[in-house]
Length: 283
Image (cartoon, rainbow, N blue to C red; front, side, top):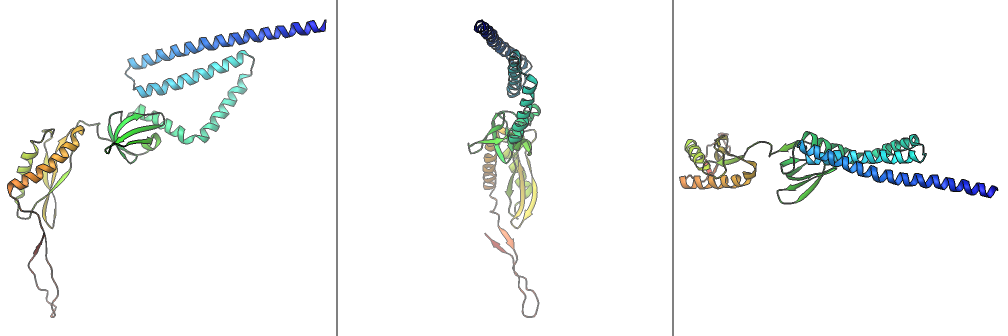
C-alpha cells in the first residue's frame, strides 16, 4: 500500500513538473517571438524618426537584453524559485562586472554619448585622440578611423570623448594655410595682386570667401606672405598642392629674384672702434 502511494505521489510530481516544463518551454518560445516582434516595431519606429542607426543598435541591444533577463526571472518564478534572491545575485554580479570591466563600461558610455551628442558621424574627417582621418565606424566600445596614409586605426571611445575633437567636415569650407617668401627688392603689392589672380583660377578654390594674400611677417630674406585660399574639405589637398605650384609659377613668370638672407658681419678693431662691413648675400 505504501509503495502504491509513493508511486502515485512520484507520478503526480513528475506530471506537475512535466506540465511546468512544457509550460516554461511554451512561455519561452512565445515570449521570444513577442520580444523579437517588439524589437522590430521599435526599430521601425526609430527609423521613421530618422534616428542615428548606431544609436538604434545601442538602444535595441539594451532593450533586448533587459527583456530576456525579465523573461528568465519570470520562468524561474514559474518553477517556484525565489526570484528576489536571484535579483540580488544579478545586482551583485553587475557590481562585480562593473568593477572588473570599468574601462569597457566607460568606453560603452562614451560611445553612447558620441551617438547622442553627435560631434561627428561616419564619413566625417576628424582629428581626435591624436588620430587624424576619416571615420569609418562608431562601435559600442571603439571607433574606426582611416588615416591619411590609409591605415585603419581603432580608437577607444572613452579616449576620443575625453579628448578635444576637431571635425573638419562640420563646416562647408576650410582654409588652406601656406607661406610665400619674397626677396627684399620685390614689390609686395605686385606680388600680392599676381598671387590673388593666379590662385583664383585654381579648381575648387572658393570665390566667397576670397583667397587671402597678405604680409604676415619678415625675416632675413625679406617679407613673408600668408597665402590662404578656401575650399571644401574634400578638395583640401588638391588645393594645397595646386597653390604651392601657383606660388612657384607666379614668381617665376614675374621674374622675381630668388630670396636670399642678408646679415652684417662686424668685429672690433685694436683701437676699440667697430668697423662696418657691407652686408653680404648668403645664398
